[in-house]
Length: 380
Image (cartoon, rainbow, N blue to C red; front, side):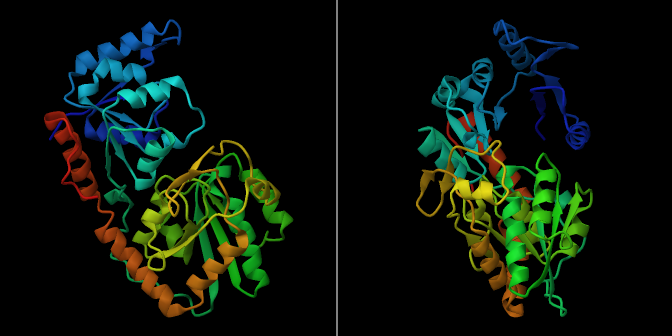
């Protein structure tokens, strides 16, 4: 079993992550701190020197820079490009085309991506020409259902419960699900929406719910410790995000037999198999329409990946009418729904296996360190 050292950017480590680090007995250090003293940004040599000392003390065979294009040039210099791999999980979508990002991507020789969309974002937006290996995310065993899951059947009452799991911020498109719910109810569906998550848009979204008259049919559940109970309460996952490098929440819902209707953007189409485990809805509305639908403007990406055109494009949003139509297609045929549920369970069991994920990632890192190239035999 290899030894691991973890170097964090700052001292704020989520309690769940900290507990896992403690269980793994990995050494934890902080690149911006020398003891209790936070090193200033200037002169830059202070933090760069701290990184060199940390690398020297760890003597690593491989250094993995985790999803951080910004401020990684010094880390690459300290570690040495010959043993450094960058792991891309969405940072290449962020605002800001800086000289430092371009320099880092010109010098780092190998990248692991969590989706084909992430790979194409690096190649098309940033012009990356080095080695890239796609290793899809998978569910940790702790996130899997405690008991074997059977394919779901729709309730005989036809009272349908939609579910949305996301941090409540503009990029997740939560307001689009609220408007789709209003349209479904206007069409005669006895539908409600449960939202798990919290964030800066909570108040705006609650006001939008009241504005469209859905106050009795939308339940904000906040942050939940027990997601398994949440999945027992819903029939269909709705995820109309404006940007999503992979779509881990759709995998998690699938483990519980919950089909999903998602935006056909970025990596979501790699998780949801169209017509098999759910439906993917192409975003067609401009961002000006998003504002009219109650969507916020903070932290929206400048670009997204269009998987149909295989091109970088400006962000668009899913039309709530098209979203409602896709939801209805999934729910108006009980046999189709049950088949989708069964296929969602099978996809998690065969396509998103955690042991395979770990094996592929470690094999790629090992091959790069010893052969100078990412493992060509790992699963695509």
